[in-house]
Length: 423
Image (cartoon, rainbow, N blue to C red; front, side, top):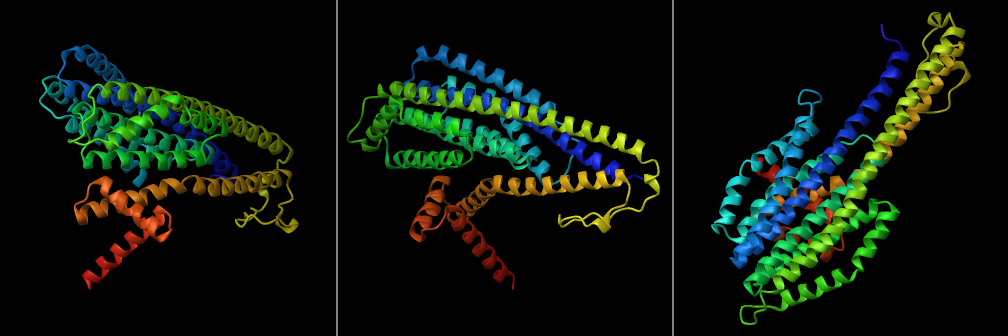
């Protein structure tokens, strides 16, 4: 029969295995980040090629496609390292479903690229075709953050996910801007879309600021104040003032693309710093967990030699409420006292970690609520994602409530109506 010692050591081994799995997850996230960056560049440049109809852009596009293909192969290799048999539950099911979704879209890339090069697809449709798998890849990162077992690493993953999400919105903005400038004007729908992308970026970076390390927040503030960002803002205003009756120079498309790319490239450097920090954090925590496990084993082995009759002592009841341990609870043996001291300390530590983990996941849970509410509005009213988000945003401003609270209220109301309909 397994003893308390066996289960205590098993708990530590389980923690360490969770950290090792988390290290592999962080490697996957870094690999996904590189692929997303390559696809974002290919997406934006594809719009230049499609909008200009000039073959001089073909060589540059081919180079970007080759980069995307190399990064894609690395991600596929990372997916192949995932153990499909270990673990179960809704979190794994969601993760595997998102990976299947991404792999399915990978298979369609060859046809998409053929249509781009033969000018058989509109820039807007090409953008959507690239954006769908990127969204799937970001969902994989989201699930990684949602299933992390360490609160510090979860906070880093939450910051990283929101930063990557904001960077993807910046990539969509780059592609949308290229399409409009190449055309020579932005119609009202295109202008509204630019506004949506700008607002959505702000929200992502606000959450990033809530969870990121001070050094990263400082670097982000420096980027926001950079001259290239200010120039990009001026071009954005030109786009918002344009119309079919008041066109703008198509040559601005390349200037927009270059400035947006400079901003996104700096963002990628910040993203790389975050992934490197995550990896070092995982390694440090694994070494610490291994050291703790070795120390426990050594301590218990020494105590066991001093307490040869420990196996004859009665089992002490573990204080689940984490209150002070009474003297009457002790077994009398040095081994049993030390075991319970370690168990008590471990329980306090796990409880503290649980509280920190719940707080770190708060923004992830709010994001789920907002996404569900958007999906409900899109289904019920036939809205686009932009319009659904705007509706939630306007309701939040009118009621002076948080966006997540409005989303929760909407979902609760929908469930209430659904329940009445069944009566």
